[in-house]
Length: 202
Image (cartoon, rainbow, N blue to C red; front, side, top):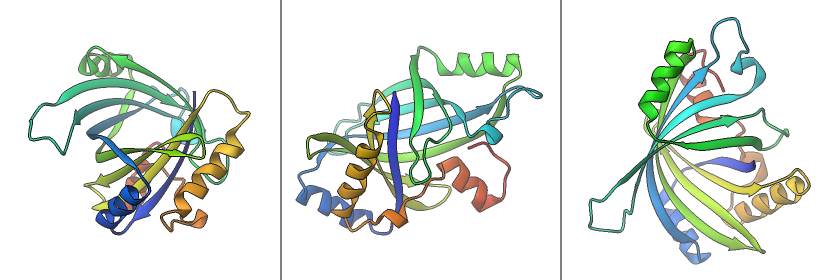
């Protein structure tokens, strides 16, 4: 699958939520994500140089509008290829659900994969039907950066409609006065690396 994704910084998340409701955005669920990134063993392919990413995600799901304390915890292994264009974060993405994320981390460590960093995110997921497209919009808070972001995405099975999908996402963001030039191509890992001057993978 190809993940067509655009990210931008958000200064007032509460105001953005109001705009979501005005545009008939549907709140779906909230997450706490803990994304642990790995690089290949020393001497093999370097993901920082190839613009790839390999992560294990711990995903805690909950409904912020429910009084229930019920949470679902899942683990996912995700590979992301290099970015496919100059304006967005569009990548090829492969993902599979894991039975036990800690066991896979241990396997990686045993095989010499290098743990780089764990990025923590708090996220609220909304869904929109915009011009025939189902668009997922996440309002993210990154505790280490103390900043909010919006990520919008469309999943595509081929390259044929990538340009159209990107244009739809930029048009969608215009509804919330987010301009194309505000798009951020860097991953959260890269933003953290920039902030703290650490040599991390993308």
